[in-house]
Length: 64
Image (cartoon, rainbow, N blue to C red):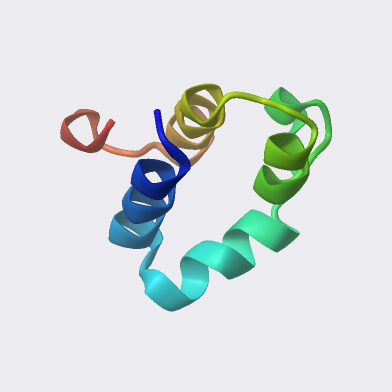
């Protein structure tokens, strides 16, 4: 998954303003105790990060 698609999906689910706030502030154990930004900076694949966000935040199947 390209980062542009990842951020588009984040904005569609959380709203454009909250998506970045969530990505900076919400620490997820499934990302090794990292935020979305930290996981991406650490080299995690955007698709893997999106899958974790979907699982943790109960994103509906049609948006996954």
